[in-house]
Length: 172
Image 1 (cartoon, rainbow, N blue to C red):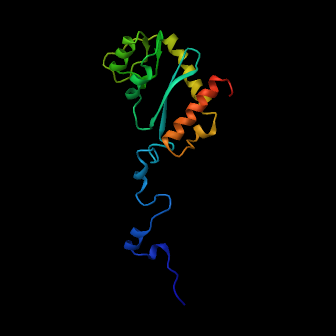
Image 2: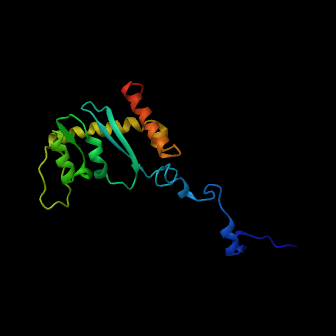
């Protein structure tokens, strides 16, 4: 009777020839530009969102999860005409504060704990930042956005954009 060959009985060379269907010929790096790789979609994506004074989404960017918040902030606040800029500690850099002042905004950003000379900020206005968190809750009510269901970054950004339109139309 022939002995059954189990997975651990296959030589190392035979394992090199086996390719899973999910990886394909070139691997996951083949889709890196279109956002098909695991770092451009899936659970490791980040939505950068700007809202107005009423908590309505105005502008957003979808980046990989490893992108720092402060690198996107200049594009996020560019051209806004607001009196205050409310942001969390992730946006506390001198460049963002200067950009906000150049745009005519008063930055209300708590200082990072690693700052040598912590800046003062208005804690009363900072409490209004819950509007941003509420906008994220409205966005993530859609299962496709909450679970990152889209297969690439462009489809995920389109889903976020459709959800923002629905929020503006009060269809949530």
